[in-house]
Length: 137
Image (cartoon, rainbow, N blue to C red):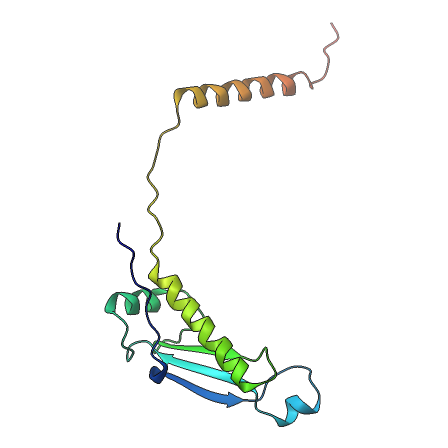
């Protein structure tokens, strides 16, 4: 089993635009454009085709129909911190696509486990049967 390299994010392929953050924050939020929109075009990127297909197949609302990842970062007060946060979240998305989940191999239950299951069911049925009305002859 070989260790597969993580997909590398090329900074030139990422586009940032500054916007005003939403929510509370007073005058700073109303005046300063500290939130960031990150846009990453999957189809135009230098990623391997395998990663592009996996990214486009993800059921993620941040990926548009045109194949552009849009990440909005507004957690921090400075634009630089929000840019770093957006890049980190994009890298996490790429890392998620890089690892393939292990295939599950179907196995049969052992005879002992089947017997234990059936014994549990019969004992439980006996307990429930005793809860019925007592018949008076």
